[in-house]
Length: 133
Image (cartoon, rainbow, N blue to C red; front, side, top):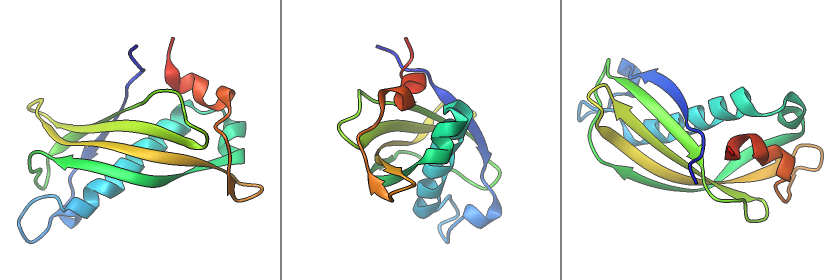
């Protein structure tokens, strides 16, 4: 089954560059969160956005190629299989203008009920818009 893919473009700023002259590994983690949140806010029902928040519980990241200042990158993300309790996997890759993947990641997120501050089982209606047909 193919999941809908969300895309978000990022231009690597000078502030993202480390002493080796390429995008710092910690910046990629920030961009993973930026792309995931952009996906959530573009698809999720506004009431769900008001009631729930997602937190990262695990990152698995493969750094495949360097990116440099001024590079235009496309962050592509899609969700994994059905959630397990409060946890849900998200897949991500960042592709350069040449079509080559710079970074590939799988992150595990947990949904938190804002009212209680506690993790909860992911409601079917929350995840349905991300799953596709």
